[in-house]
Length: 308
Picture 1: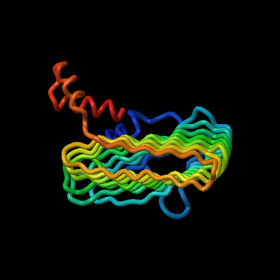
Picture 2: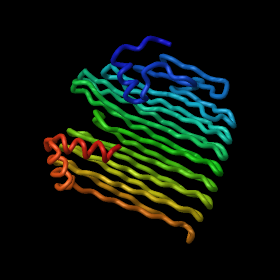
Picture 3: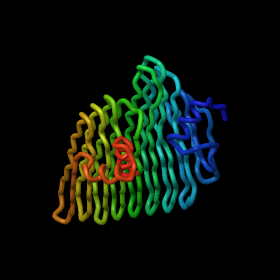
Picture 4: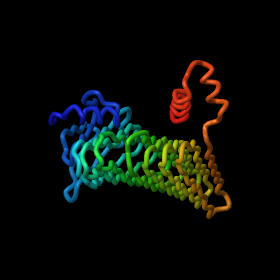
């Protein structure tokens, strides 16, 4: 494995909670090139023969193993699109950790667009964690536009944790999922924007067979003059259960557009959507300030608890 510099190691810690090389399978990418890779007996990672990206094959029955595929950019002016495909065998139970961190101290924009496709086998279970983080004092933007496609076979389960808390100037996250019989998808998004940042989250989930279910929930905070859009559509094509929810705190001159939508194409589709946008309640601030916190400290405590 190639040596990473201090900035790259810090970014790796932010997006993947890694202080050292993890156990199990991994592929580390820094400034547009692979800097480390490891396959295991049950998880094989190979480079694509055409284009940039990797294929990850997880053998049927693999349990209690993990795959880490974080990306870090520490140079200004890099723009890349990477295609990663995951083939998860039947009856697996694995953790997949992705995410991207950009430190831009220059005057050119840096951008990483990760296109991930998941093919999840029968009765397989995965947890997918994707964190985005930006830092650096340059005028160049930090841009992330991930696309995630999830194709779920009968009885499979997928839990997705999508986190973006700091430093990303522009992002458009698109997630598409198609579920077969008794498949279950759970998405938990946590997002905070500040300054002049823009963040768009798009979800389109198709529940195609009986017993399939989806629960898509976003919690977000918009500060300063930042803008957010949450656009989630759940489509019920059979006897299924779907729920989407957006719960947001708006501050300063921030703007938030919530567009939860439902499409029922079966009389047995049970679909629900919710959306709530509001400011921090004054009584919450007062209560914390009586405990000795300043107003700013009280706000931070409330936001941290809300996004936890």
